[in-house]
Length: 221
Image 1 (cartoon, helix red, strand yellow):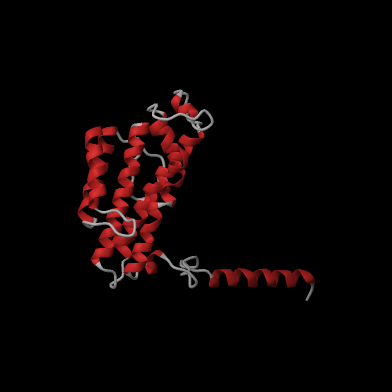
Image 2 (cartoon, rainbow, N blue to C red):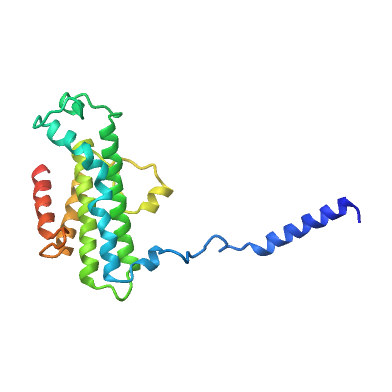
């Protein structure tokens, strides 16, 4: 058998292996070494853990400097010529670093809220209590509402979305008018009030924090 025939046979063998080895679920591999959305929410402790990043990671870049510029510096309540001075001078542009950080941080808060709401409604195990589930649902609605409130006050019309996967599939969307954004925020805050407990614990919010923000939104609206 010459080399040409050997190579031909090898090619045919490879094609046959590909045709028989691949199937529709070839890429649908269930991780065995870490959690998935379907397996994580199996206890109250896991559900409460899922809500913890809403208090820190989601807001890090917004709280680091942007909130001072957008709030106190813009209102002339504070001044520092070496940090976010553009806000006090009314010289901010779309390229101002703190505005870019605020934009990305607020959208991170929205997407994290969306993800947690979806997971809690679809993936909670039978061992999860309504008390734990409702607390974190309330935290997620409060987070999303607060993020959109800052966005509409800073940029005006915003793109409203509740499904992260849908935005990935169809990212080009029209801006929603300010009136619609405020309605969305008020709806989310009322849901937060419904789900959150009367008292907070371990630094977690209660329904009264949501009521306080709702009062501020209604005054601004």
